[in-house]
Amino acid sequence: MISILIVDDQRAVRRGLLNLLNLQADLIVVGEAVDGEEAVQLAITLKPDVVLMDLEMPVLDGLMATAQISLEIPQTAVIMLSIHDDKVARLKAEMAGAVAFVRKQGVEPLLETIRSIAGLGSHPPVMSWV
Image (tube, rainbow, N blue to C red; front, side, top):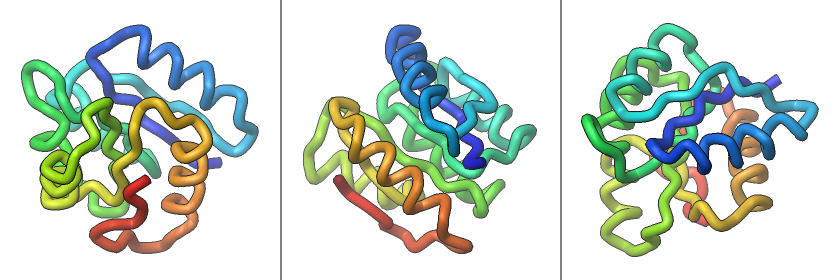
């Protein structure tokens, strides 16, 4: 089983991801966070295989949270999720330590990325920029 922490300030997005991931036999959602600060705390406690991180959030944005998680729990892979898909956002995500960047609109690319990243023992700086 691949354990996943969902981080997004929008309840509807979290619910949608939770419903999608719960349909997958090999994935389990171990927690949800509404901002980056809560995400860092939960990630340290739960040590999930993968964190699905929203790029833009109040309190502590996804970039800062990703950088903290990458330092504190290097074995946890962070996949950056965003509706804003541009070179600057991707570069910032990579520099923060995200191993992948997936647009929120793509269901299959997200599932493929989770599975390919979780299958690795160590994570390269950039795994998938779908």
